[in-house]
Amino acid sequence: MEAPPLRLAVTTGDPRGIGPEVVRAALTRFRARYPGVGIRVLGAPLPDTPADAVEVTGPFHGAELEAGQVSRAAVEEAVRGILAGEADALVTGPIHKPAFRAAGVAEPGHTEFLQRLTGVSRVGMLMAAESTRLGGALRVLLATTHLALRQVPDAVTRPLLESQIELLHRSLRDGWHLPRPRLALCALNPHASDGGLFGDEEARVLGPAVEACRARGVDVTGPLPADTVFTRALGGTFDAVVAPYHDVGMAAFKTASFGGGVNVTLGLPFPRTSPDHGTAFDIAGTGRADASSMFEALELAARLARHRAPV
Image (tube, rainbow, N blue to C red; front, side):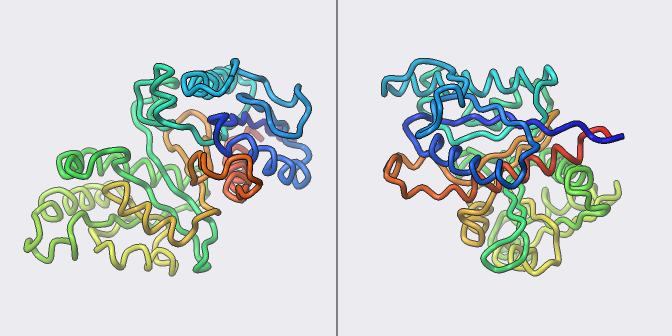
C-alpha cells in the first residue's frame, strides 16, 4: 500500500527576526526538491510571497507583545492541527524568548512549551547534523537545557540521565533507523573528574547511570571527558553524545556544524525540528540571513515523518 503524502506544519517564528525570510527561502528550495510534500505555514506573512501563502496568526505592528502573540498562536495552532491528523510533523522558526514570555508563555522555550501542549511526560533536546565541517555526523542531546550554570550539578541526577539516555536510544532506533545506537555520556567535570580530583559526580551519578542503562540493553559508554568525546563522535565511534549541560554540548556542536544543524525535540507524539540559530534581529531584512539550517530542518522533519508514516 502506498504511503499517504507527507504534510508539514511550519511556523515562521518572531516576525521581527529572520524567521519569515529563511522560511520563505528554504521552502522555495524544499518545494522544488520535494514537490509532493504538503506545507502549511502559520505565523507572520512571508516577504515577497502572496498574502494567502501564510495563515496569519495575529496582528503585528512592531511591538514585542504582538510578536510573542503571533509566534505563540502559530505554534498552538500547528500543534492542534497535527494532533488532529492534519499534518505529520512540525518545523518551527526561531522565537524571541522575552516576547514569548510577554505573550504569557511561562516555559523558557519551544521544547518545554511543546511538552506542555502535548502533555508528554518527558522530552529531549537533540542537536543533529547529518554532515559537518569535519565530514562526520554529530548528534548531541542536551540532558539539561536552559539553566544557569550554578544550577546544573544539582539538576544532573541519575534518574534524569537514565531517562534521557533511554529516550535518545529509542529515538535513534525508531526515527533514524539505527538498530543499535552507540551512545556516549559526556562528563560533567574536567577530565571526567580524574578519579575524584575535580568532583565526585562522575563516580556518584554519571557512572551509575551508564551502568544502569547498559544493564537494560543500551549501548552507552562513559562518562568520557568533554575534550575528547565529541571528536570521537565526529570520527564515527559514537552515533550520539549526551551532554550534561547546554553550553558544553552547544559549543562543540555549533563549532562543527553552524548553519547546517537542526534542533530536534524528542519524546513528542510527532517529529519537531527547527534551525540551530536564533532570531538574528541585527540582520533581519538585510538579505544576509542563511536559510541552510531551516532547509535542513525541513528535510529532517520530512525524513522522520516518513519513517513514522503507515505503509
